[in-house]
Length: 443
Image 1 (spheres, helix red, strand yellow):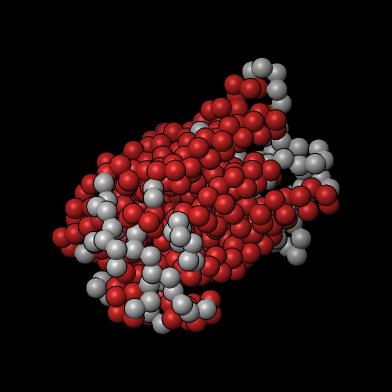
Image 2 (cartoon, helix red, strand yellow):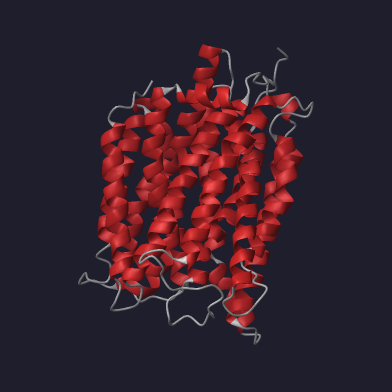
């Protein structure tokens, strides 16, 4: 094998800034999509797709997002397999990312643009097609991107460091995405309508995300830092061999619960802030930023402590903190303290869990993929991370359809049962996953 170059800080940061870019685009969808098409009644956004329930508990936006996640789940392992088996002389991962980056950005924007101003079947079709395309190109960039965590990191320490870097940039990207509520008032003050102002803000942030996603494509020569080991197996055999790793499956079930929890936080944040606490939309960004700052402060401790005690104990503790945070979330607005102080308490409880989960899952999967490759001779990093990404998206799908459906039970001030139940549901799922995680072996 050709000897690879040493991984420098410049390359680590170049890689991590790609995460900053795609987390901006992902954050836009997570934070604002459901709110934009199913807002509280006091928000002046016209009905562009039906908001009423059918079959008693389903909504159009919930079904569309579910369909998007199902499509995403199918394309995840398929694209990962193509990447694993690629014999492109420029590398297995970067060429895929290069093809995906522009359409990924374009469809993020198009999701918020409707051909008609009022609710219609054409709008439903438009949103469905654009969201499906968004998820396909999201996978085409993200699945190969995550595979590089295992391939660029040649030691456990390097893989943990890379996971720490991308955890940092993921939170920054999510904060930037949630800051759209600070941008669109600028355009409203120019006399532009709220809907158009939101769309302009989404477009600006998407272009910013596009520029950051280009950085690893431009700065990393995959041939110099990665030993290329194409997997000879076909798609189904590679997928089957991946699922034979029982320890990996236990961890992914646990990670699924985290995917549900983080998506409920991302999607529900605007409702918790504006409905339960009675604060304005700008507090969505403030709460997100505070969570991120707390996580940043804890990242060095997570990095150091996980090397001493192992990753399992920290993940176990993180899920306990998230369970407490979501149970607490159900009582926001009822406590005899100021709404802002209630928000800060939630930030502290959830921020600890987010700090740990921000780093360790990617490091754990990178370790499992590397060890599995050394043991079997098949280096399926793309497939392992595809399953990881699929579980995350499955969690997002479950969370978004659950959230949009449970909102039917109440999403207005004084009639907010649906919003409060989301916290209880997230905590219950986390508890079940915690019991399963006891079987995981921190090898």
